[in-house]
Image 1 (cartoon, rainbow, N blue to C red):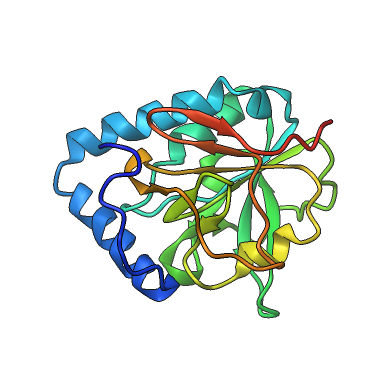
Image 2: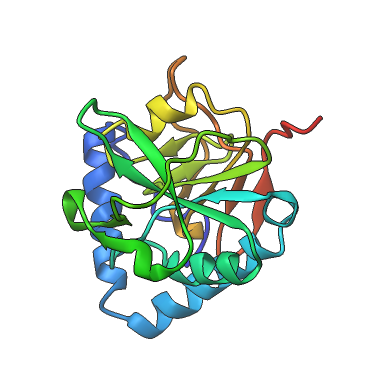
Length: 201
């Protein structure tokens, strides 16, 4: 997979979502390659300053065509990090709930694993790292999500570090964005970790 190659000519977000979703599904046909790439991305995140310095990690359970996050969740629990996963609320927002083990998860909205009802809602986001999902990302840290806007709304008021996990062949030079789009602090790929903004400064 080569960074900045095979960039779609059509930059319409709907088209790009379909394009990069299809690329992800094609990668599923070669599970060994996907596993290798996912492990590279996981390793880069886990040795990053953003991860090592955080006390709480906000992270989602990946679907089969997404970069695997279960290894990160398991290791974060072993590292005694406070681990919180999102749940879609009826208001159209997401809230994060603390889990103590994978037994605290069940299938919820969009058939994605999310915290069970007994899990405590997270209200203190100090010293937190948020891992935001994306299909593709640009070199300035702007990401293309799945179009629901859950994370866009949440990140408007989030003051901690934000990173995103992305395959290196899904990095583009520049993406159209508006004033509501929040760039991430770090882009973690199978080939590099790119720091964008340091909120700790």
